[in-house]
Length: 384
Image (cartoon, rainbow, N blue to C red; front, top):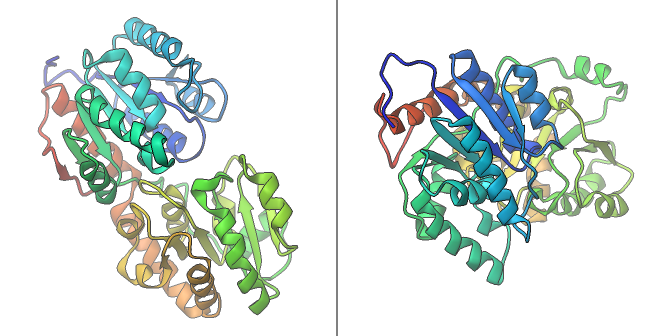
């Protein structure tokens, strides 16, 4: 499809499943930015979760797309329902977020509409054995129906390329809203949360599930609590592993549950930790750094690329290594001046490199290239 260079009313349909967590936040930020530039923006997603209400509040069209989080026997009906939504809306571009939406959108469209697929971490990293082989095989096959793929880190792109996924690529790093996530004095944030104690506070934000590695963090926390008995760990989020984590957590671990806005918890923290087993490029460290908080993260896809060099040397640890995680936490918790210095460096880094406005501009450039109204260098990184 070719559009006139003077046509500013591009239309995009975002398709998303899941509808919570990082995927929903990325989609919401893109919708907000695209609406502000005059695009017509619609979102097809399940009605549960935060995403539909969030984008509806921004003025986007929303379309209920009943779809399970994982592939199953209902997939053919999900594909047909999505095809009907696309047929009714006739968007210029369909942008599918995460593995499930990417599966359904590509099966529904099969290249008939320009389709951007953004995996937000590869599906085959989340499983093992035969299931991983099947997922990898599908991604190789399904690449033919993705007009363009957007990876959030070079590491994510390389993982796909090494797995035999052949498609036009762009690497567009995740960004965050630097006006929403901003530095505030920790004590003021703690007062706002009703916290009166002065203990060292470590915060982990994320869905309570295997991917995010809170089980590894609890094993590491045993060593931290032994050395620093007044330190407290807060797990912000909910998920399928919540009950099991609560059973094994000591009294020094608090469960904040699912919250609508994690910003006050970042601002209240002395240190933010995310011990993921896999990612594309996690938003939590970027959000924490935007609040001028140092982070400790595992060295999975996107992590090294998202940190400034000085923080990577202190806050990057191997995945599934509780001993290394404990050492990194203890080192930073025991050095307040270092935490302060790293927090300032982190804030500068996010302002310069991970402002969501740069991300949205790069995504818009992809759309315009697909529609023949603007240049883009495929198979290369787009640096904000």
